[in-house]
Image (tube, rainbow, N blue to C red; front, side):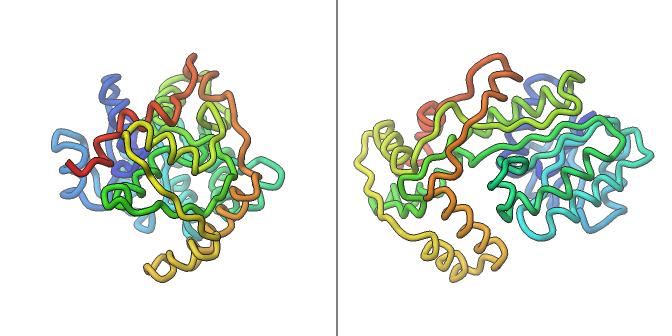
Length: 288
């Protein structure tokens, strides 16, 4: 039995699909069971859980053999990771697989706020006394779904990363690696950096999406500061807005362009391209 935390999120849902296809027993830890039923299906084993509620974590891990640990970005991330590590001690759980962030162990990138948020949790998982695997993915190809309203409205997409490149990864590939890590001992004690097959600039991603959709898509270059200020104006917490500003700045300066072969190593195939992701999700950008 595998417990999937963050089961209604981007990676969590992809992982639930992968586990379902592989007929692996699974349980989804969610905040809102009613909402999760509509997203995941009423036939799934759903349990309400909150990282700030130790009793709910104990109930969630009861009878579980492995845990996929996903915690929301932000200053509380480390404490939530630590709460789950405490919850599994002395239970049937034998393995922890943590979703972390690309660059946590890379000189330079390890100074990013996102790395700082994840590092204590990584260390706790590695020192838990259980089998463990850490997954460090880059930016998700699915972040492009945030452009859908502008594309439907024929409005320009705002780009804060300039011509800086990043090897964005299909969430389905992250989930596929997670299944291997959760079910195979060959990945115990490993930390994998997960990326797509090639580093692309955001304007190139937009161009690829336009080619797939058969539409001209304009872009508007904005500074990382403008992008962060717009998030603040929308009510996004300051810590997250500041992290976005930092990440966009490094991306714009070409500091996050590295890629990894770890997906191919684990899965025995190349990771999916952004074009493949765009073709599979084209309907999400169409107005008809």
